[in-house]
Length: 112
Ligand code: FES
Image (cartoon, rainbow, N blue to C red; front, side, top):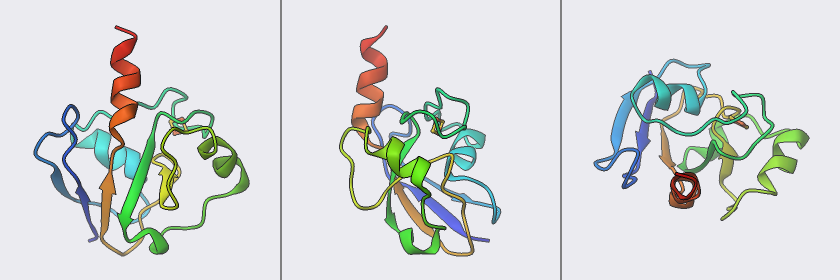
């Protein structure tokens, strides 16, 4: 089973997390199932940027993003070459190291 390592994020997972994931699950679903509450404003339909994650290791093992996802990502703050929408990044048989961008959290808490 691939191992997904979430790097520490001050609000969502202060100590980081190491999670065994099923192949075929999205990065977002693995996070949510383990109490890492990444925003997913459009309910995983590839129509927002709140589930933006950066795949620091294992990026190439994922299916390439499609055009719709790329269009969305273009609108994400802090876009990086290894950025993906968490709900569209389907885990394969390789371990991943995933960073949850901090500004996502800031953006969210500003609204409270
Ligand atoms: S939850 Fe909206 S694109 Fe992933």
